[in-house]
Length: 216
Image (cartoon, rainbow, N blue to C red; front, top):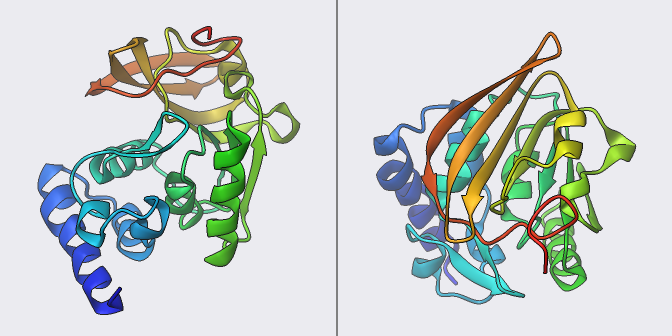
């Protein structure tokens, strides 16, 4: 791989896929320019790694298209210094994007094979502010709660109650909710103990399986 080609494709991804579609958060754009997405795409070609579609990463899971990663991250409105929970580590790419902005990232992955592989890649890139564990993501990660932001990268039939409970005051939760073949991306905000909900867009994610999600 030519490193210069990687940089060109990464910048092209930002300029052609993200900015024209409303991604304007400078911290998100900088993170998307920096994180080497091709390292998280299971041996796909350089061009495929930065293309505008999701890709399989094993165990029936996917790495989301770049635009969706950027959109969901932008919805959290991270300024730096936050503690973020990610449900569905997958390849680790979304965690890397979050770690470029937030102070601490905690990520829960259902499949141990994916969790271990992601950990190796993230460690190799020098990320020190990401913790990964294998478990039921619908139960969150109560040990380190509350979280300023929670991002769920799989589609749920409804919003898992533990995730609501683990959201900090003024926190934001972004999650796809709907049927197994199509969802609405919901942004939930917590202010003074009250929750508001906004529909961001339609989307399609793999199912969120667990106690408070889809059953196997």
